[in-house]
Image (tube, rainbow, N blue to C red; front, side, top):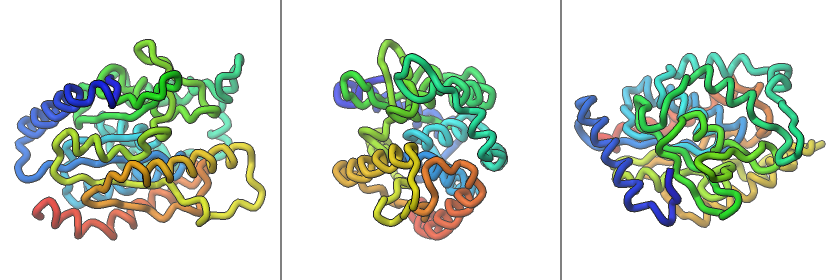
Length: 288
């Protein structure tokens, strides 16, 4: 783990070396390919459909970067869980199961402790270090006390995923190596620049942060209001960072609320469609 502003040169050199070693081990030739999976709460389940479609088309990914739900999906893919299994797990989520993951906490540093979700991720991924994932993986998080963007390239994979999805106010911040970390969407919702800095040739970004003016909620709940506010901020952060990818995939997920994880099957379908719409450009970019 390193701060983006202070440790960038050395940190991304290390990540680039890991990618190069991975490509040599796998016998990869041609341009390297990276995939940046962005934040977006429930809408990020569309990432599953995107990744599955790319893998089915024979696209070999050399580095995955993720933020928030993108770190959760990306981390699961990177540690070797098949996309079909991730889709199956996501498709079992319903309103009742959502309630089972709601672990309200005192004293209030967030509505939920996040421990139940963390335990679930541990069951799926085991006790793996980020630097040991079969596919190289990096997550983005934010130090809530200093405002620093933190690049999570080492240490516990589960800690990195847990920190990256900690939406302030909704989840208790997660302490990693003495730092109090929250959702990376505060500073870098779609970390495509991580791919560039790691010397990836073809950078693919998946953006599921909606423009809130394109959706309408008749009776918003407190959680809807919190997530909408977060989406407004993230949309503006993405615009201000101006980090164009070689190919940007934007599933049409605007009409799904950030809390509607029970819409997994539809979100995965939308991810598959968006990936199919872009697969020609991707295959051309990688020389296929």
